Image (tube, rainbow, N blue to C red; front, top):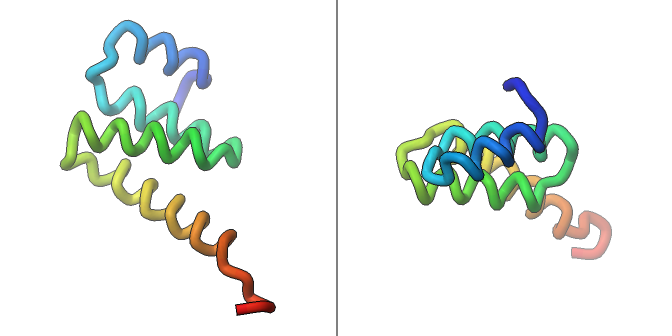
Amino acid sequence: MNGTIEYWTAMIERSPEEANYYFERGCLHYRNNDFGKAANDFNRALELDPRHTAARQMREMIQAIFNFRNFDIYNP
């Protein structure tokens, strides 16, 4: 992973059909705990390349985070 969110956004603007650009930006959003934006980028990467394994795994990890956040341990 290299660059910044702004860098990958500029790359996406130049080449909006490149799945890896969305993946890289999604990873940066993920590292910043901005899970909604990360999920959007991973979903877009998968729309462009359904075989993008890393994007699929990251999307599943974010879904697990969302599920955990929405699960109330003390008041089921």
